[in-house]
Image (cartoon, rainbow, N blue to C red):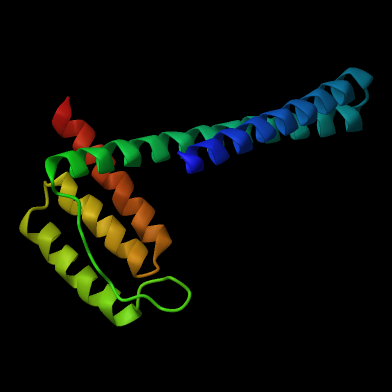
Length: 148
């Protein structure tokens, strides 16, 4: 629940910032002239892009939370007791071993969204955040296609 409160607070602050930036862009556009209007239009794009990125991240977070809740309620949440480094991150060799197991699960059942989700968690444990997010997105898409 605490993470959700932090996200709400950050979204509210970002919305305030984007509103101010948007207002400044409108003022520049109203000022007239080639340079102020061009600058105003360029600045106006930033709040739109920012709002889109925030929306996509909120959707991603909600979808991963939904899938993790489903895994927990079905008793399929992975309980991996990986040894941790002093930083709190899993030890690399243990994470790599777990990753190989998760990859084998996906290879055995490529249509199982839960296997893809667990593989995404293994990518995260191995420190590959980019692939973790891509794999989790694939798991979300696979789940949504199967539940339609």
